[in-house]
Image (cartoon, rainbow over all chains, first blue to last red; front, side):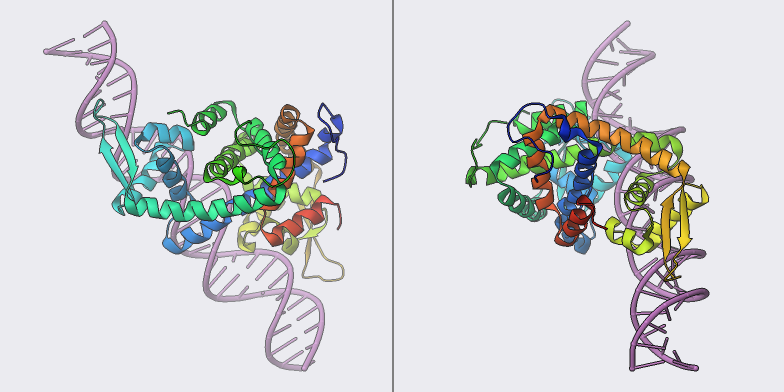
Length: 168
Length: 168
DNA sequence: GATTTTATGTCAGTCTTGTTGACTTTCCAA
DNA sequence: TTGGAAAGTCAACAAGACTGACATAAAATC
């Protein structure tokens, strides 16, 4: 990581050559494969897919969330999410409770079995992230998060920040 | 980007709480959506998909590459890649030439039209990356790349580094 | 109270992109 | 020269995204 880099802060246009940007693009592409590789391997053996993992992750993060909220976060159609949820509910990994104040809403929770699978998947993913963080060091991690945040689409960034800061 | 961070180098275990790792995981998930959003929008209007973009990108990067080499890079089955290539060749975006020394091999090149589409897609993706890099600053960019590299699977990291350093 | 809007679920059909299996052509080495 | 391996192609199937249409129930509004 030496080419073209300033070592102190400030604007450095050398970082913005097409060459540099291309390296970032390819790094992002290859890294995402690594990022999903471990959960994918676990899921393949259990007849679930990445879509189920995503649902489990965010239901775990936001217990009692409604279907609509989950749709915003996941950025898929309700038909697509519904297929996944139907399966998870049928298999006893997710529980869907009718809302108290608004009975049209369904609030989603992980069952014990759902939490167990979520934990298994998350731990595999965290293990890789932990290894990467350790290898790169704390300063690199701060930079990593900064660039990723700046790469998100506007509306999604707000969703992310709300989640990140633990606001409901 | 304040919580739990050391501002000078060295090991800092506070970065490795599950909480911190989870934020990184979610950042990666949301950022990847942004990363692919612009090319996806362009492709949707042209009746191509992400797979076509990936093929165009790497054929552009490695003109004359063989199908096998491309398979290693893209990490899909040859049947899957073949469908994409067939279409790109039929549409006159990619040219496939029989190898000289080994006539089993097909060497792949972008046509003028292929290069034009690749440039359009790449420029959209670079624009977002450029904006993110500018917003985050050069030091953050270095960290970003370090963490991404550490996140890749072993074999893929070698592919990436070879490409990155411009070795054939 | 009647009407409209919202939240959710479901059915049917399509598309992209992944998969496996079977096959051809070509090369190379025993 | 023959038999296996490698490169590539074709066919059929599956997951998971999409759109569109429609149903139900509850809340909100007029």
